[in-house]
Image 1 (cartoon, rainbow, N blue to C red):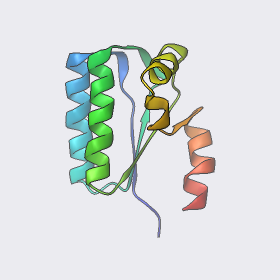
Image 2: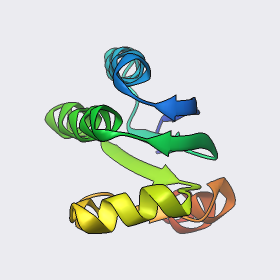
Image 3: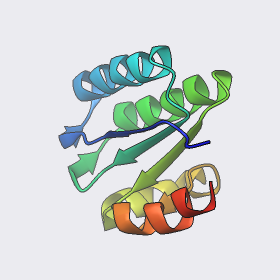
Length: 108
């Protein structure tokens, strides 16, 4: 059985406004029955505390729906933020979509 995978690609600064948009997008993805959600952060330049909260909220929504959430293309600022807040232990991240495909989708 092939899992239904959805990729979201936020852009710019992940702040309160963009974080709320991300929450809405994640909610729609869950309603559409996606098994795996990949959030590709390649075009995100900066994440503030509201954006971080949106990512945590997204993880909670996905877990509640018994789906899986992964992140990829995380820049150095976001990596450092994850390490400082210990969220690097919660989010499974990949270098890019290709690595995600090799490590996650190839094993499904």
